[in-house]
Image 1 (cartoon, helix red, strand yellow):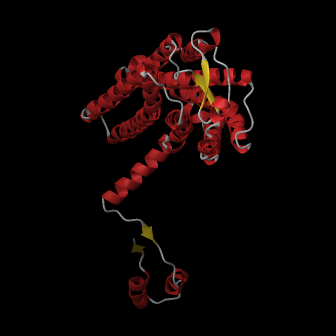
Image 2 (image 1 turned 180 degrees about the horizontal axis):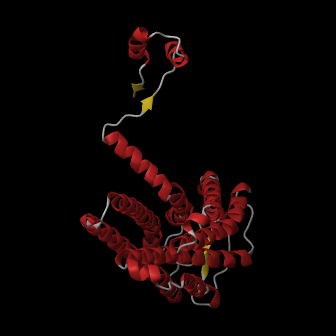
Length: 348
């Protein structure tokens, strides 16, 4: 296994110091706070959602992302704060490799499972409603499988490496060794496969929802139409957000891994740092998608948009001395019409 040596960075002192401590602090703070808030909301509204299958996946995703952020960022920020003089203990670097590999892969698989679950719920609603989903077993299988893949470098299948600017460790995809390149291809190909399945599943969900939307005439009353329309809006918005954020955050790291694995001169620099920060951003944004795009919030936004687009303005009542006198009955009937003209409710 490759020695964990920081000497590669001493010759790039100015380049290393150019890396600011602000991005890791912001990422760590927003990620930890967002996942904690998502967990609090899940428990607070547990009576309404009754821990349906979708919310179990959201809970597992928040727990996985939170643990990954909590274990990594305090040590990484310590190295930034020490002006890059604090060195990782060798055992921590091995743990950091396992942590990154496990959290990245398991989060991606949970999002994929969530997408497949939504697809099954939309395409086969009756079977889904009465079926035994075994969500807990699926989550356990995801975590076990991710732990196995993340353990490959620790078992000698490939090696680990400290990456620029010496604040994170990951599987060695900047190596010319054959075993390292094979391990890189296995991990990146698996991530790419999960990404493709997620995109396909979400696209199928959106297509199914839009297709069924044209069949609203089969519903018996307006209440059922409105209720399903709200549900469809929620599903489409959430799925679109998930697939866009997931794709944007994951593609840079997968591309960098494949480029380095096939390059004659693999790089270990700012491009790799940016790629891993983009991937970590997925764990930071995920809880905020759930927090902001909750069904209740989308329903309120949808009603507000419809109200504005239909030309119905929001009333604003101005209370004046004349209107108070009208309320007290101190004005005569003849004066009522004049006062009403002055104090009538104005619309914005």
